[in-house]
Image (cartoon, rainbow, N blue to C red; front, side, top):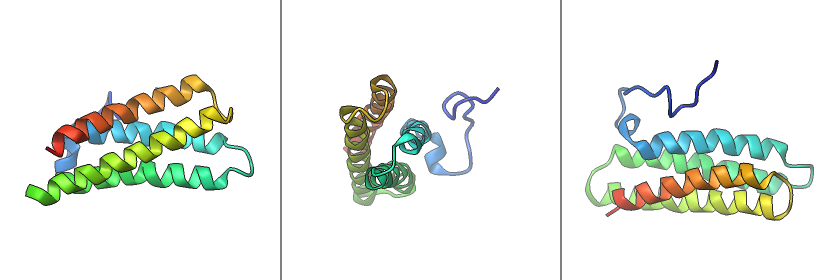
Length: 123
């Protein structure tokens, strides 16, 4: 049985491995990819934008964890913006009737959690 990154997580050698915001971003990336893969022909731009923002939310969160001071806070603010952008893309797929609203809501919930954590980290 395959488990989610949140349930089988163990501490790793990197600073970001200890961040819950990073773990949530990994789960959002995996679930968001499933949504992007379902989008019909003609919505490639939306799928690409969604994938880029989900991946950026993950990687910039990791980058922020390795920084200190104002640079750290700035990275977390940027990651929060990327997570918000990803949430808007996910919302658009549901609004357009391209994916199940429940599936989209689950990913948006993960991204909202990530944004809340990043907001605290950016203070």
